[in-house]
Image (cartoon, rainbow over all chains, first blue to last red; front, side, top):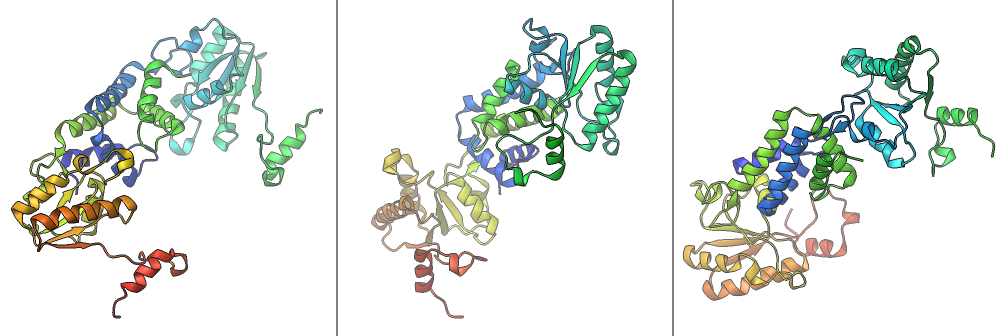
Length: 199
Length: 199
């Protein structure tokens, strides 16, 4: 149906998450219609990003520089850290413009079913970093899923050993802003009630 | 928020149709995590498709060869042609496996509002091709929109001059398969009634 190089492009596009056969075909037919400069810009952006963007050796954020922009910034509080599962969570926090500390990206969550244990994540690096840099507070900004809870507690136990006085916190539970109370699940509602604040 | 090469990749991905800011970010963070061979394969597929896939000089289908696979195939009826607006329409017809003739891709539809007239489309090439090859039948597989109707009638008038006996047809109107009669719009229903067939 498609001439071979077009079929190959469709196949490659289909590997992308959330891109099915139909979307891949639409994208390929769109791309083939664009000026060659535009295609080259996309191909080059892909290659350059892959070649130059590496993990920050301190916090494991993605960065073209090492240490990353956040670890190097003198405007960031070096004693307040946020522990996140993935770089996308770091991005979500940066988007709030509320957090002015540093990060530590774990690279995932503990999940024995998927063969992800302590050694597949950047947990030992976090422990060593805490022992050396002695931050004041560590905020766990981790999803309250089974994997998230397990990961937080495993890390907490490790850190208690190297830094017994470290202040560790987690994100608050409660109603999402703009949500309807009647649609909140019971656990969320119970947690929001428990953590009620003075008005 | 994003290190520069990643920001650039996100920007390039966002140019794609149907890819918004969120999806572009998700795709970029996914891609940066993939092995370098996978990124190179995608970049190369893009460049190779753009470099090698051209319009067939006969029917204007996209092809890495000229004439295209369909124009060269001895299994296709050379006297039955289907006129389509875009290559994606040709693909849709090929998917039915019902049409065994050849094609002519116009490259769009007449749309004075968007500055697309007879000369922006492959209409003169169609007229010349009909005059020379004298097909038996021409099927217009064109969307029944205002632009589609105008385009069909303009082409019909041109072709009547060079080939007064050419048999020209258009796709049938009717209910889409699997649709609910009660939801069909009145025009479709009226056309389906008018074109009723013996059971």
